[in-house]
Amino acid sequence: MTGSTAILGSTGSIGTQAIEVAQMHGIRVTALAANTRVDELVKQARTLHPELLCIADESRYPALKEAAAGLGCRLLAGTDGLCEIAQHESTETLLNSVVGMVGLKPTLAAIAAKKPIALANKETLVTGGTLVTETALLSGSHILPVDSEHSAIFQCIQSQSADVMAPLTPDYTGRETRRIILTASGGPFRGLSKRELARVKAADALKHPNWSMGNKVTIDSATMMNKGLEVIEACHLFNVTPDKIEIVVHRESIVHSAVEFEDGAVVAQLGTPDMKVPIAYALSYPDRMETGVKRLDLFSLGTLHFERPDTETFRCLPLAIEAFRKGGTYPVILNAANEVLVGRFLAGEIRLPDIADGVERAMEKWGRNDRILSLDDVLVVDELVRKEL
Ligand code: MG
Image (cartoon, rainbow, N blue to C red; front, side, top):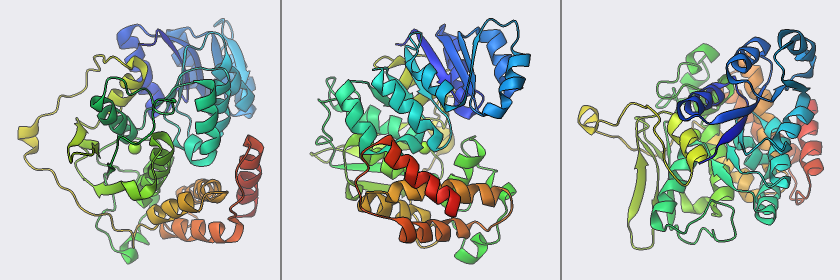
């Protein structure tokens, strides 16, 4: 179990729940970073007394300086600030729960400093891909998944053998798994036709029944891009190809994912949908700790449902798989286009199906099979898409 943690994205959904878990177990919080919400960040700092405090949006730095005066924290700003936290001597475990591709640099910084990472930023693996996995393998820095499905898969694989180490360690090969069953809630628009999907508003999408999440993840969940990003994330984390991953829509979100082994045995991880479980597991690994979550009651559930995803209507899912298969710059383009288009949908400028259309066009226009060799390769492609789309 970790004795302390630094939290990037501390005012978000994962960040605030991580703070609750940390407080429950006396895990010291040594650093906090938020994107824009200065007041909430400073409020957290008053209770937790971190050494470092960072605001990612540099234009908010003067506001942070004023609000945090007298707190005794060292104040940082921007991506450089996030990276400084990632590498700081006081950082024992880095919880990276920032949203979007801005999370990639701090992850790479933590890997370089050989810090264990509790990773809730899926864009890190989607855009960084083998650049992240290969540097993590070289440095020996453990990446522990916080995404509920990937935490479930990790727990299932671990149940196979006490020796199975964290993903992305030299002992871990992915050979143990015959099939990964990746569950999906289907989002709030499961069952809608293409035409109905074109009429939904951002406010309809933001009412997700099972999980409480930030806006970006909620829209990704509504288009099923979230599941697409998760397939890419799983391929990198568990060293498998998409043909080994079966996506199953399971509206109750009780089975968080499952793994099938050689002998036909399928091991699943179940529980009430609550992010505190995967957060706690990443912080307590290889042990477990109390989370205070509502206990699973199978009698009150009675029945669980499973169905195939509708990939004709929810095209972001097959597009993400295609991006992974093509490799090169495709996943970076997919992610950047999606981030831009989700922003436009939230602003009421485009319709929901326009996200898949725009992502597809961006991949056709800019996609190349060039190997991504450095962070700069990622950033160049990412910037191009953001500017030109
Ligand atoms: Mg998830």
